[in-house]
Length: 302
Image (cartoon, rainbow, N blue to C red; front, side, top):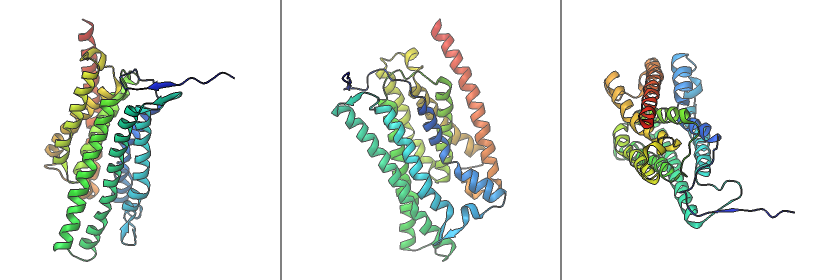
């Protein structure tokens, strides 16, 4: 019986192997939050099936139960699979302690992000106090509101952007497959985060933390020896680049079109306009990105 050979991975400065499931997991991360738009917005507000998201169970809406029991665990699993793809081990690989540490840090960021979603469950207390008891002031209400709208959002968004930046920086080099998918997932990711932070009433937090993604792309470029032609073919560089520029642009156009950062959930039946906005902006940005991509490729060949 032939002895199995293992590769000892001591660094992530090695060529990445193709993994087709990466795009699928990223697409899930990009679309997962939009369950609110589909079920609560379209199904509940527009089509009139409000029981889907707004049935109260023990004073808590089915929307919030779904968020904690379905959305958050599935999102954790999708991001966990991405971390495994990025850091390994792949088939016949053994990770060194240094690579394991990078992976553990990524898992810590993921755990804190999901923890932040859990803290956000205090939103149900604030809603119950306001809608059922008519309490909108007082020391206890203010404390609950702060935990919900400030603390939980800072935890969520800080660790989400740290996680994505960490993945962009430390993914193995030259992951060159799925070129157009890198553009699309980057655009969708930027748009998803933009709408998410608006719904979370935290657009200014995202503008600050979004710099993590841009800085991560610069560091990834450096890890590719400052070779623009080389790094432009890399999946996570392109994903991060389009993610990093789409989010602030989406925030800018959103407040311009809707006269401020109006939460989609506060629009009632008018929330369909946000869906049209998202689809239109994605289509326009994708066409512009593809044209820019072709132009850059032509310039690099000269």
